[in-house]
Length: 379
Image (tube, rainbow, N blue to C red; front, top):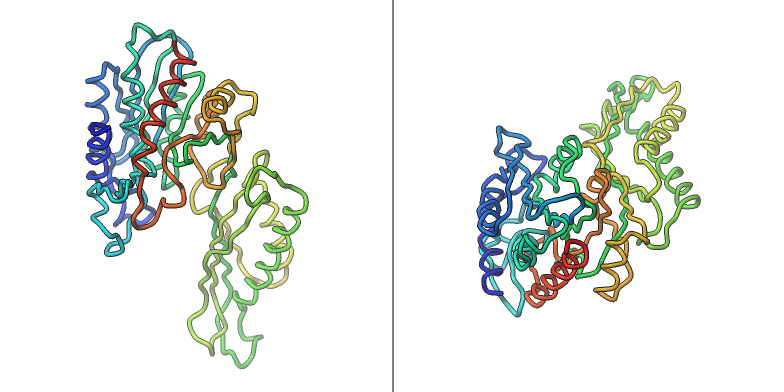
């Protein structure tokens, strides 16, 4: 356990923030190179696949054993930005307090890699009838660029996959899709004493938001999944900006919102319906409508309850496979033909916030779960 903790500390010490703001965004190559060295030492054949920034951002595929099928142990190497001054300890220095390992990415999800490597190293390649593949991706927290690049390559190929996102050691087989979008209305400014002197984008946005709320309510009545919390499609009106002064008619107004759809639905279909309704509501207003996704959305994820990896995880953990509302790289691995579950030692409740931590007493159980799964599927 000390060796695993030391490796987690080394990963946490390497900043690898991915962010939409360029001044906060960082490469992940140092993390990938460190993982590559560890895996090569354990007898894995390692490939580093550049994704962006001249190779400063990259994916890693490390394979032990040969043949068709196999099990992927997958994680992302990036973290979200952190809040300077709000951490009790240095976010880039792993600190143990009260049985917890504090550090940026400890739970979400750098802590998974040393655990996966430890589980994989315990089985010699000669005992494997199907390979073990350790997969490390870039930019999961910001657009899924690494996972999308792998889908384009259709690599790696395997029968099943475990993504070590924080799930409290419980298997997860489905989650909602998520996308973020912007709606911008462009009108004409004018003196506020006479509304006819301009075209108010803010008044138009009021009508547009009404259409969003109506569609949201309709979707909640027509579609639900009791495994999810909440069990309905959600639309969060995140931020709005418009106008510049109380005595001027608002010329431009922009709304940004978040859409999370259930498995079996497509976020782009919902956005297309929404745009048509907004266009109808604003017909004759002379307002220009701009609507687009802020980044390409993450599709909903669902692996069949009867899949072998789901049944194996349920048997070993004693928990029925669950659903979560946060997004993962699961749909992308499924798109490459893998039966995928999400299962890791961390807790999503402490991710993306100051004093993120990984409970130290979950390391050994996670190693054991992975070792048993490898034994069941690969030996």
